[in-house]
Image 1 (spheres, helix red, strand yellow):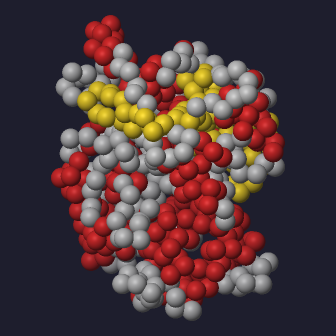
Image 2: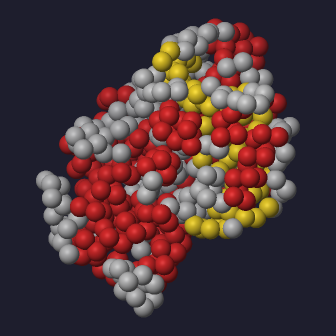
Image 3: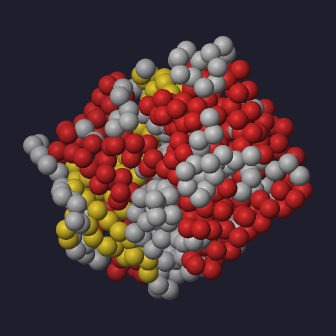
Length: 509
């Protein structure tokens, strides 16, 4: 797979939940704790009045800067948070439209890395010609005062904990791992932990919009980035420019519904993979039917649960790591050949292939250290929405409906949704309709067989937004823009360059 495409896939790989790590999917956050009114506007003037000092990033074609935002918008004078910004200036020809802010999702994905590694060089040339391509690492992410939770060694242990517990002892061990993770976040990042909500990040985006000199915010958000963009539109409808929300979330859903929907989404993605696999001569899951393929994969997971296999390093391939590796490959059909090879290797007693996929998902470095993706993911998700389950009994009660949604992944997804029940900071968000009354046309993009952001979420968000228009990609994989559909790309490019949204309900294959 081409490196640029792989970076884009991995940048959006968490979608809305860390799934086997986070499980507490991001929902919607109300602005109830935010500073509003003339007094608050006065207190925010220093932030809107600051100057961005651009410098060389050390990456050809890109500049970097740092901006300040209030740590707590309810108390703007109580301290700052410093946020990393990057841009690639419009290349021309053609009149510059403005800045195009991009976010790859997560939550926890580095927008700066995404810009410098993909969007700033891989977006269509006509778009890059007329926009300054811009990104900001959200608060708590990567270069923007990152949330930290566990050491590399402890994170290794965390990713290997059995997420399909078979008895009370294993349930207790899983619960303890979530508690240790949460305690580590509080110990290492207690100051910023209550202030990484999506509403706060959306307010940061408005400060950046102003500092860039733009009257309107032009934005492309993928996966969780759609929730961030929709939240911005709801807060600042009059400042909405051209917004593309690709791989949309549904802000009206509670966490348990989001997790269950994603479980079904990954089951659908696996069915697509299995249907293709059984036609291939190298399919390690058999060549008869998708049902047999699912049975074979479940048998492999069960074998790894009782006896992990070597990987060529100190870590062994456990059931939890193998499951994560399979999930990582569900985001893009281009990864299916790699997955077939990795599963075949595990069946032969070589777990290195699935471990590599799992490591890419977790952003684990060869040194054994982890990027802060998973830490920020949990921090944002658990702040944005009340936990799906408050204890093991609730998770266990939900097992049948999760296993119905996915016979392959359901059990693990249900138990993973327990993690926010141990979070040290109370959630600030609640599910609600996001209407953004008065906003300019917003393009919502949904993929019919998207594993992480099911298509029905895009349908729902487009219906909720007062100016939403739905663009559909009938296909596999997570998100649609830049994934090979000329129909999708042309519709979005036309909107970004001319301001004309596609007809509501337009479908592409």
